[in-house]
Image (cartoon, rainbow, N blue to C red; front, side, top):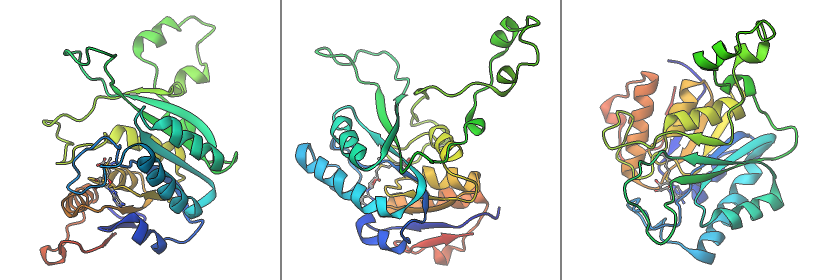
Amino acid sequence: MNGPSASLYNEDLFAGLGRLADASVDLVIADPPYGLGKDYGNDSDCLSGEEYFAFSRRWIDAVLPKLKANASLYVFLTWQHSPEVFCYLKTRMLMVNEIIWDRRVPSMGGSTRKYSSVHDTIGLFAKSREYYFNLDSVRIPYDAATKKARSRSIFVGKKWLEIGYNPKDVWSVTRLHRQDPEREDHPTQKPLEIIERMVLASCPPCGLILDPFMGSGTAAVAAARHARAYAGFELNQDYFAAARSRLAKATGTLEPQETLRAGANLRLF
Ligand SMILES: C[S@@+](CC[C@H](N)C(=O)[O-])C[C@H]1O[C@@H](n2cnc3c(N)ncnc32)[C@H](O)[C@@H]1O
């Protein structure tokens, strides 16, 4: 499969971001450490409180100059940190949506002194009011029952019934289970379905996606599947290797083994 370029860096984003030209990025998909002590094989998720907020301001300040004037940014957060981070982003960008990712966690006990938390908070921000947004690429077809219920003559041929509806701001997508064929060895891997919706709606064809916290490379795969260019950074060597082989598989690009040097940066296609 040929397509726009993908550059994967086994590198700290703060060290590597200078590789990208200012005002070159169409879409940022930021899935930073949560500030909840997850084990990413490094201490990147050990920050809490003011330290986490300072880290958030730091990556936001580093990333924003890379955005084009009509670019957008999605950020995954938890309810613990989203209020402060959203307030900060609102001083720099236009807030477009707060999206709730309902991870469809089954009811099995859970918290006893509060409600069980089963969602991620995702912020969608834009650099300006002229941000790119392709609604038609992410519409959801009406199911057969709804179509049937709307089969009276006044609805026949209605465009909205044929083209499907606008996704709402609550996204119910099952988190990846250990047994899921999509699953890599990464503790907070995101489902492709979610990332693909972001790519299709918010990055123009052949546009450039920046993924400051690449993890297992979900956004790299989504970019390749939809012919968008991609640049991603990841500290952890094993996750970097997983992202690289996932992308190679998704694109049908078989790298010769000798180029698979640990820590090597990679440009595919
Ligand atoms: C929430 S995970 C991303 C998961 C990814 N979206 C996926 O679907 O697999 C955050 C990742 O950021 C990486 N990370 C943390 N600090 C970083 C930094 N300064 N530069 C690059 N990567 C970093 C962590 O090692 C971790 O894998």
